Image (cartoon, rainbow, N blue to C red; front, top):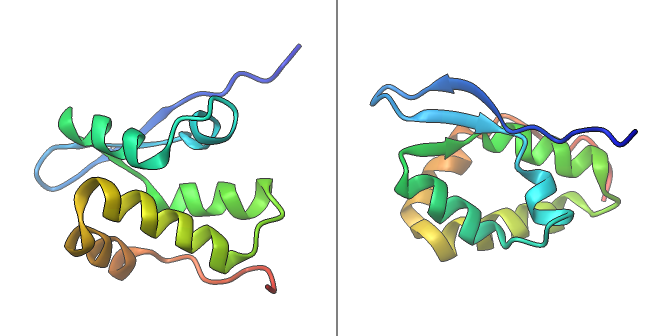
Length: 100
């Protein structure tokens, strides 16, 4: 039996927006662009757990860390702009856990 991919609520922001994780499969298995995922959830007051997304991408792919971060940047900037991306990066706690 195939493993079910689940989007999970992992918390709330200070302004009461839901924070979710588990969207990686939407990108890789369903082919939905990250910018579209971010935009649609954001319109509905839902924020992605970017730490979890980066960790999933590091552990489930052979992509270099720099490539992962470039994909993240492209998705965020295309959907919510460079200022939002800058804020995400300030809060991102993961570091390069795999050598490029």
